[in-house]
Length: 237
Image 1 (cartoon, helix red, strand yellow):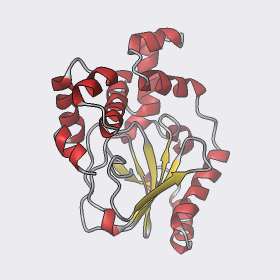
Image 2 (cartoon, one colour):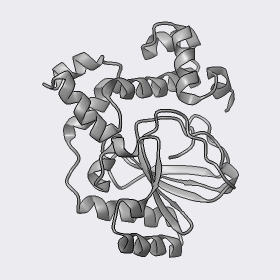
Image 3 (tube, one colour):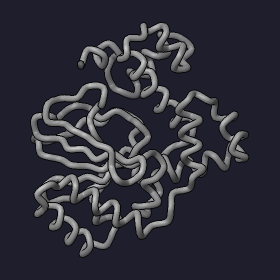
Image 4 (tube, one colour):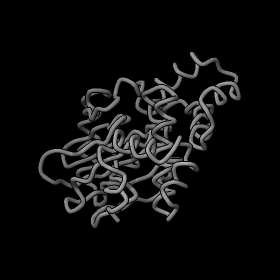
């Protein structure tokens, strides 16, 4: 996945994809090492000679090893399993080789194609678009789940509004997002809070508007999900 998008280091860039809701990004060695925060998304990744998939994160991910060039397609939350052909919960907090999910011969061909491209990010996007064209459409109900939870609507209210039982919503969420709706709501609340804080809203107001019980609750959640204090995240501008 891409770096923490509240802080954009030199060498990182992203743009909207032709695939609805997706983002295409590049990360040069100078931008490596920044933590990836949970955001409810999954990514198709390229680095020279390899194609991988980043599953949904429940905690900050810190890349290991020497800095390398990356490109990725970050799918809109809930859409990647339909394209990749694997339930999201099987990839939770994991980075796996694409050849573990798709036929090895096909992945070798696609890897060579992206490696040889003048713009690997665009070539990777083309791979995602071609796969999406051959895949079933993601369930539109999943977009409604993201919209409701992302706006701060409680899980129980969301389930009722969509005509689902709590068990049905949990089962669909595991397959689509990699974790249950309560965890998804928590991840989306983190992103909502960071956006508010970075826009200049005081922390007490950020906590209240994002749906936390108080500022201490906000601080605890940020530390648990991001792996660092809120003040450190906000200082990385």
